[in-house]
Length: 507
Ligand code: FAD
Ligand code: DLZ
Ligand code: SF4
Image (cartoon, rainbow, N blue to C red; front, top):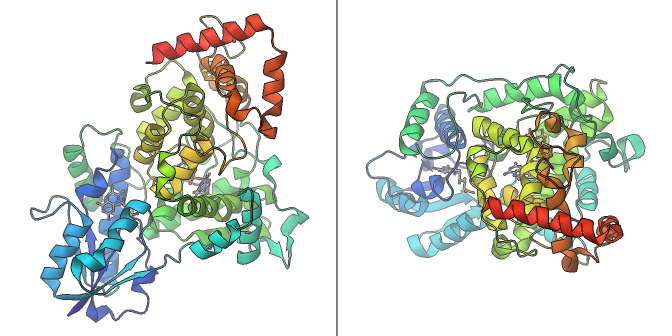
């Protein structure tokens, strides 16, 4: 009689809680490629290649470490297409007496796990996922008696808890946050590191062929596929980032440049989220670089803030908000997602750059996601659920727990401000300040109306006017509303008419 341990595609960690303390000889690990997971959104081809190849490599690593692994491929003739179906088949194959699993990463899969004790009539142990710094109970207790759930205060608690960049009770540099030093626009003459490219081996080639055959219509290219698919290679990219990109990460975190998809970002999120890299180990390595005088404080603190601050905070919000969070639509936005989100074919250069590199690499950095594709969707009033599904589909690092609060909450303000204190809405001026996109665009960022006017400008004012009733009282929106009120009526009419004409053409 065996203990069955199912491991999902975002649980590729040797220290996974469901494996801790188990007698390897008495266990069978089950890993399964299933339609249910490959089809809940039309995943980018590279995202699928990454996850399925990393799963296959992880299964081999576990076998080398002495575990018995039963691995079901998507193309196996008997594959039932669902996790639950595969558990049922494995119970038959291995005479299973009990199940042990690490908790699910999202509501959909949690509901499935919760149904297993009744469905299979054997003991099912669900263990907490201890790859996060903040437990569910800690986050819930942090939310108690707070009117607003703001990341900054949560982040300070995580600094105290982890001891990262702390000297006793005092933050390193006597300041919690060096955000103001993270906003330099980048110049083209700076030498930029490129992330390591890992040439696909035979296992990855097999997955590429299968994905190209089975998901021919999905977004993306696999010809340039170069993600790491093992922990060993992910650690190589981690070291490469620490040595070459981290020193400038702080300064240029918000910058964007034509033809430069990566700048000084780490490109580590796919590895952290699937479990190949340990986020705390990574943050400790960042602090070592800082203490050794190799990177400035705005880089080290800025990076650690993203991981133990934002990443942990959005996970907390996801579980706190509940399964109905996905239905939020505080600004009642209903416009369908334009076709160019899938093709990149638009004459707005900033959008064609951000979407084009997404098609090519299944990657865009934070400011591109927030202030280009996200900002446009917000200003144009695109349906937030469609926007959410797009982000979930197209990025190699996308799992619902991390993607949903970022897209629906932070970027679309669809939760009415549970996550962000104000909408991240901006006109072309912001994009022009933080990038060189406008100098390569057929639109003129300085014009607000007329055939050459940058669409973001009129759309911005249309957004302000359209949502006045909902946003006017937000103290952080006082300035834009003051500016709107000061504007001459004729200008207001012209701006709104221009935006509406543009939106009509959008479909
Ligand atoms: P870096 O810029 O090098 O940052 C370092 C690390 O910090 C990242 O690897 C990531 O683990 C963490 N991080 C930074 N910002 C965030 C954040 N806001 N939330 C959570 N973690 C963060 N991140 C995902 O991991 N998966 C997603 O599906 C995802 N969807 C997003 C959707 C939208 C609309 C927005 C605005 C942001 C989204 N993010 C998501 C957050 C962020 O854009 C990515 O984590 C980051 O771009 C990943 O690239 P990187 O590893 O080079 O990050
Ligand atoms: C994203 C993804 C894909 C495309 N395919 C699989 C799969 O076939 N098998 C699997 O175990 N996991 C896959 N994943 C990742 C899962 O969607 C993720 O692990 C679950 O949503 C659990 O949160
Ligand atoms: Fe984007 Fe407007 Fe700049 Fe063109 S001019 S790149 S549309 S912000």
